[in-house]
Length: 411
Image (tube, rainbow, N blue to C red):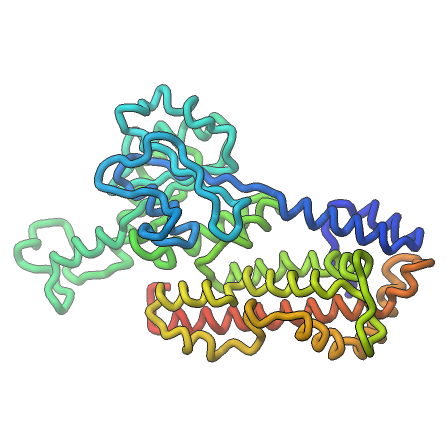
């Protein structure tokens, strides 16, 4: 099966290969990779003051409210103007904390012009404890602008805690709460469904076209509907924007891991071309010419994208109350910090034999002449090495996720 190649620059790339100009083909591959790396995604998070907007902005960026660079939070309105917060590791993902729509300074009739709605790719409307007329007005205005929005009901963990107080330790409704219209037995799922259905009903009555509602926790975005929200965002974004979002997602779920791998696979062929055609040097004892430094960067990028680096694992261990040693125990591939030029050369040497067989597919890809002929083995060698490493880190990330989720029935 031939490797997938993104559409961007495909014709120019094929033309360069047909002319046998590997250096030009590599330059086109570099342009395509740089283009997708510069795709900016701007996410607006808004709603009423006090609903948890700033905490959501921090959580979706993978940081805590107390971390450096976090959006300010408080019991009173703390965001007076639209404030942009780049993702700490992927600065092309910008999460914008918009002022609450019920604050004195930002009245609804002025709000829409002042926050410059056209600047954002999509909106997340935060609401708690109920849908208000301001939420509905905001949703209706976003609809008029032709923008997508996603309605998030926050702090449902607080609702569940308050509701559980009406039941005894065996989950039976206390007598003092008996006159209230509640089930005799405490059932978390039923409470969440009631919250969601009430929000949907309010939106539908207001004729809001998109009435999907996602329930999230105040403290842990891995719980309740956040994984579903994450999947929805990924599915509904255009392809290049989807790649940008996928790379930045820090709260992993199995489906996200699979989509990340699928997206990164489309870039392997371009990375192989770039490695073999730009600043390439022969490897001692190996009939392969490639840019080892670029490959080191690529492998480190794979690790970072799948959370296989010290910082990501430390954060995950803290969030899941798991010893970091327990997470590392299931990792078979090198962490980002362990990747060196020597390691890359060892991996290339290991893949060189298989690349000779694969070179047949390289010639079937497009009629090649000139300098491209000399790349018949180096290109497949690099491609196989990158693919194998991607497969390994994706498998490791899944194992880490499974360990992190052990014992948490809410995820």
